[in-house]
Length: 174
Image (tube, rainbow, N blue to C red; front, side):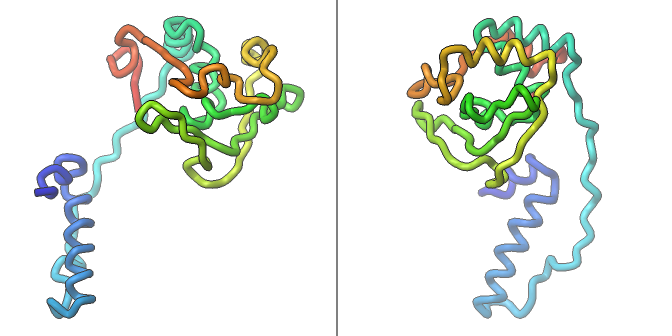
């Protein structure tokens, strides 16, 4: 039942990994003597080049997101993931040093924001380009040390309608 879905996602590789894990378990349970798929030569995975938006595309997307344009710029230029940027407290943004510190992330679980550790489960810091300092100052104004999207913490942090920009040939999505 699952194999056709997996083989479509990554031809051969996920199917092989699932089947190998099942057969390893069968070996452990003494149902079979050895795993027959160990040593099977699989075709190389095709490596597709990553596509990144141009500065103009990022600017267009930020403009299309109106009130969330600063978030778009943080995502594009600071190396933050979506949930990390949405959970970023003002106290973790140091514009004097030009750094932001990632210590937590947020995910939307059935309409509720759930805070936890970042994907890597490690704290890290990233650069903040100088051209973004004024936008961040404006976004942080009056926010204290809480999250700079704290006024929407119980709902979606940043709503952004892009009018078809993302996922089109105009702007790649990952």
